[in-house]
Image 1 (cartoon, helix red, strand yellow):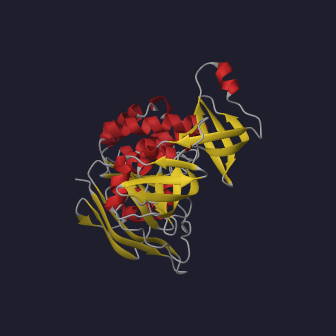
Image 2 (cartoon, helix red, strand yellow; image 1 turned 90 degrees about the vertical axis):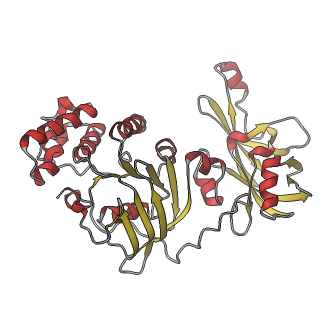
Image 3 (cartoon, one colour; image 1 turned 120 degrees about the vertical axis):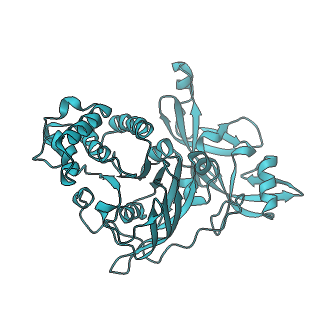
Length: 399
């Protein structure tokens, strides 16, 4: 079994900078977990502590029920794929993939079988005699993944493996990783700053900021029920619009009021707010751009167009509303004339509204989602975490 458990894990560097704080996470066997967040949030440091490449300041890490705090990387039965591929330039693709097996003194026949099976899975069989300098970025990434596959580890660790690829190749490699996961059936921990990768790859997503976990949930949960303002703004492209609004409670019914618009919340949202004892007061309202709609109704928010962007299947309309830059996503059909009609010049007056089901209500002081009864995330440390002070190397894991 390749379940993992991180209990109260903390990392403090020698200069007293806290990189990871109070990290608790249970990962099931064969689960694909994605750690996501902005640069410096502690996600790569967490991954490297699991790998054994970083010492743990406090807490415990278990792999398959075994405590591994003091276990060397080579004995943790994990394989790691690095951002920079970490291939040996003087070796062929075959030798790069076989290197870890040779260090472990596998028989030549077994090494050859495993290398060729991995190459076939990754569609790089014809590249086995080439050197890394003769490969494209995507091919190098496949070789790095192949080197990890042949070891048949309990856990795959991937540290931003697609960040050096162009957008088209990233899309292709995401699909390859999904197919790979289905074929090898093992546990994955994947680190990225790209929310698209997180949403498409992860069974669950761990969103981090300043070394703290902000929310853990499925892609659907973090998108539709963000725990706080940070998660709401981080997940979703374009990011969620935020407004100063007033939440009004009348019995068990709630509505939000802003800019002359009154929007009744759904019974489901009202029930969750009532269960948490939320009353009338000033709040931060969040609505995703794709959930705003242009209208001619009087019960709407007045705005003025700043910029209109044609994005292919949709038009992104940036407007000035209530003193804020607001983005409205308007889908368009294949009719070019319709698309042209939705391209508005600067200064065009518009009105927009939204449904009560699309409203996210946050406490103005704490930033917490008022519909959620979960305890608040702890305050971040006084000083933010720093990047990895050690040069990434595959040697410690391979040996």
